[in-house]
Length: 196
Image (cartoon, rainbow, N blue to C red; front, side):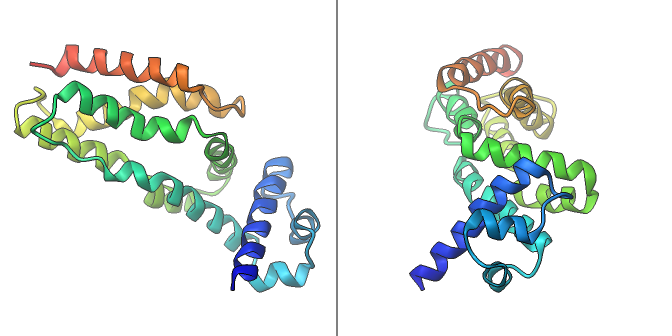
């Protein structure tokens, strides 16, 4: 069982590398097998086809993103401290070269395939987490906003506009120091607009 799981991971790692090098359309199961140093039959034993492999990559991204989904508003804690934590919930992903490599690959493919875009969005959409946080913070009076759902989108958008999109095209990940600055400045800006 452990050997099978290791082969699965090995093939998936190889697929990520080949997709990044060649793009989805130019990648073949033969290329993936060669990069993984396994037979083509072994690849097909684990994944039905190239599309299934790509969906497994999306699942891997979703698994990495899941810890950010655990953040909830706590009325007993200072709002600034919690907003910094919320920002870093996203920031931990954006400072991960592995996650950003996957994100860069997937962003390229969702332009090509709207169905894939919908699938990715359903697995990786963290906007509801930010909205739920803002709804609770607003109800508690910790922030002032006419629409906490929009405020949740705005907060996440401020983080991504400086720490995701500029880096996705370069193939790099934001550094922890850069991310700290982005988070602190986002929280400052947000509280100027929405604080008490």
